[in-house]
Length: 457
Image 1 (tube, rainbow, N blue to C red):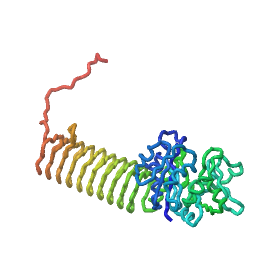
Image 2 (image 1 turned 45 degrees about the vertical axis):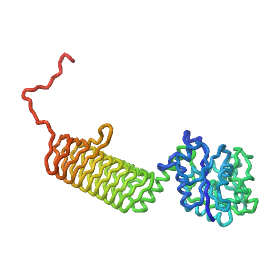
Image 3 (image 1 turned 90 degrees about the vertical axis):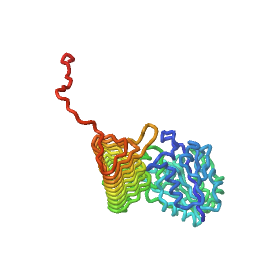
Image 4 (image 1 turned 90 degrees about the horizontal axis):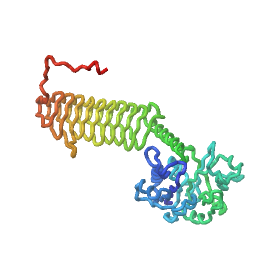
């Protein structure tokens, strides 16, 4: 059967204490709702519908996808009412999966099992056993062990509240049959809401089979209602990603101090020290080592690249066996060639530095193309901005730039040129020559430094 998905994302999330709709709070750098959409897409559904409400158009605008049916729930009258808003957008012959925008870590394999159960003519109900099930609806079974109904905690008796098997709210059901059950829902309960879970009792009364699929890990079905739960789920997510990467051959100095906020492609024999953050899309080649306290975003690091402590790399490509840091910043649109060395307190922006070149100390390189085997001395800067426009610097192969040099773009330094320390270069420097711009050194005999007047105290 074709699969459709409705994601319920209308809740306010009062306990988050935030003006931001709950489903837009971030887990691993992405909105909670984006995680759920990604899981739904892996099921190859013919339609995804999202029921939103609190925050109005903020939610669809923030998510920014156009191939989804966005359905606004003007009044939040319960999960049953929310599903009723989305149901007209669903093919009645499809198998319908109900997900929640604040339950981001459910596994695709679990959802596939749930759909398989419903596809055999029943209703698939995702449950989990919790040691402390406070806040969840309890699964009520008859003497034969079959599900008879779900009782929300507010309506449960003291005996029923002792039950540890709870409802997660995630359901798979034939859309057409759900359309028959929705009108039977009532808001005659402690919350005055239309509970989607009440369809279970009606289905059983129709002699419709209801089968539970149990989540093996409670983290899968944990919803987020406050910032403490969000923080716990963040660590659970990161622990899961750390375990996956170690299974692929990555060494993590401390898996508890690792953060992935995007996608990480890895080779073999990679070493990652503590407090490293990856964001966006990052690829690491074989033998890459990354020191502590680094931030790497949207970057490709080739084989054998070494990143020392406290570096920032954004939107850059680093070729094999380059070495960066410590305390270096590689800004967007930078490409470092094979074997390039970028040292401490160096900033590089929108520049290409080719094979074997070195920028080792306290320098700024912006809007530049640097050739092979160039040595950039300490304190060198390319003066790329004139207050209105950016200009480009070219330094050709084998050039040597002395310390404390200012290169005022646009300018070209020729192949094999040498720039004397302390120079300010405002015109092209010819290849193979020494270029200086120093004032001749002078010594003034007999000059004395001013001294402090003793009467000044």
